[in-house]
Length: 341
Image 1 (cartoon, rainbow, N blue to C red):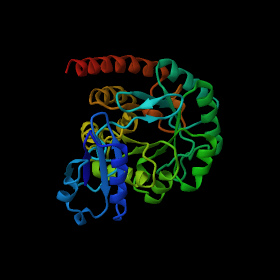
Image 2: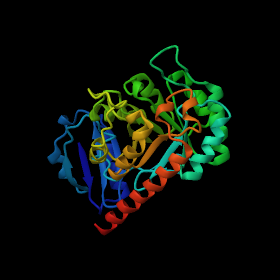
Image 3: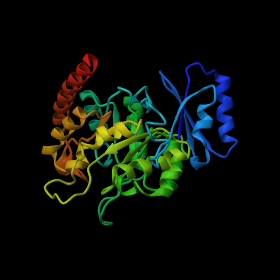
Image 4: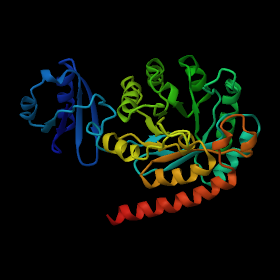
């Protein structure tokens, strides 16, 4: 249930109303937008008479919310969420960012890749220190040494670092090193214990859609994180498993506008994992940009043929620079149309 507060309400009146609701055993989520203030009421709201609330002086109207996700719901939070990922890099609310770097951290070549990505226009650095692999015999990542290399590169280039966390026991290692964004991979999108533990850390989260996850399941995964107090969540469409075998996954571009309709959280597109092949990454990135994504996550490697993981879907620095040029043109066209509208 949401209660829309009148513009004439004072801060004291709003505080009194929130206390009145919480004294009755409910949780609240107050969202102050440019045009209206919304109080989300979370709990068994069948026990609340909406007509009683609407009779109060400060309440304009009351609406019931049927979706199980509340904190991630745009009805509770009409304004787009903007997330500060560090170094002044903002995501959401018209702020578009590109996360780039190798699939996995391999060593000293990370700095070379990071410099090339930043020169081309990337604003955030990605790289896997801990790698979830289908086979236990595949490369599993450099671990904490990889984290140290990532953070060194991020500090030198002043780029926020995005890297995947697989185990709640590693959260302290991530936090102590100052990792800017914890990524939850597709395989862990319903690891509810990990989601809740990450929700207790005050670090932005990039949450990927599950391998066969629905949009609602992605939003409920975000709800797990947010319910523990961490509302700095970015949603990531990275393709889902379907009957199609010509690509690694099927990139659900539909999900980008659908997520924007349902949620206030930023939406990132990952064309690398979605397609699985270098030749398809750039067209999918352009489609995600045109569909309104708040950012992209793209794998870049200086020598893809020698990459320790997922080289088949990595762009070379030159290919990435070309992609960034075209992405900028698409963004210019979208922004111009939005201003005219």
